[in-house]
Amino acid sequence: MLVLTRKLGESIAIDDHIKIVVVSIKGKQVRLGIKAPKETKIHREEVYKAIQDQNEEAAQSDITSLSDLTSDLNKK
Image (tube, rainbow, N blue to C red; front, side, top):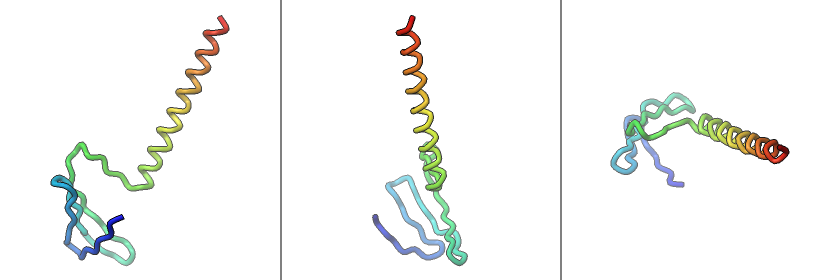
């Protein structure tokens, strides 16, 4: 992991298309502004993990449903 130190108003560039700016600092909280192309998905980590969990659950239920269908067809 790359660790950088930035001051208020300073930024970090990622490739040619993403820029992260320190917008404000209040106590232990840092507000970041992110400039990126619209097609770039940006999520807070806890939201990203929730999306992954939901996708895994959906994929698992699809497999179960498919197994049930196959079982039902084999019975006929």
